[in-house]
Amino acid sequence: MLWRVRMIVVEVVTVTDQLRISYDVVVVGGGAAGLSGALMLARVRRSLVVIDAGAPRNAPAAGVHGLLAHDGIRPAELLARGRAEVRRYGGQVVTAEVTTATRDTEGFTLALADGRSVRARRLLVATGLVDELPGVPRCGSVGAATSSTVPTATDGSSAIRPSACWPAVRCRRTRRCCFAS
Image 1: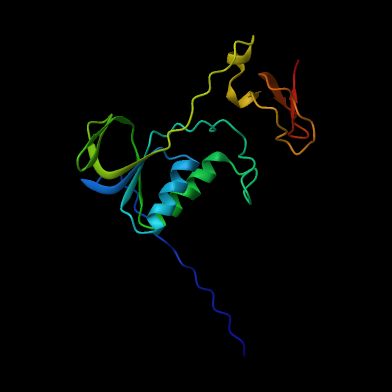
Image 2: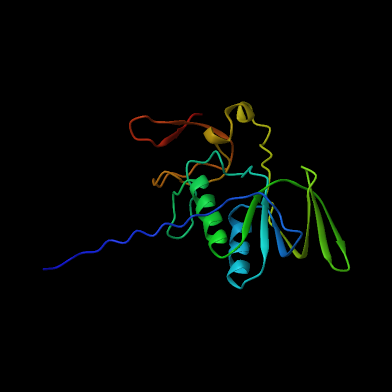
């Protein structure tokens, strides 16, 4: 008689925004770059906290492209996986906004918008960018989710649009973006 045993392993993660007084490293910015840096630091057992304001630049995008083995993954899912990986190695991820960072002889002190502060020996800043859309008519009104500012094909086709802000319409049947002129 052959018995099959199924084992289900459940990891319980307590997510808290409580900060310790001091860390080896504070990572400011919880996007892909900040989480990648935090992951490598956590793997070598540095105490760290990632402080992220929760406003990723690519939030309106349908998917992240050009990321090996994850092409097309939704931005929110990529960040959730990244946060889980950092936590798995003992790192902490906190939703907050850093207002100031000052350096002294022992490292850095960061003040947060909610009145808290945290100290670290080292500081990794990975805050990203903010898009400033060009002065093209209708560009600002269509929003980031329906316009493209880069010359790339994101729908699997070989069609590449010029680098400008083009209002896009998603076809209901094919789910591909068509650019209006």
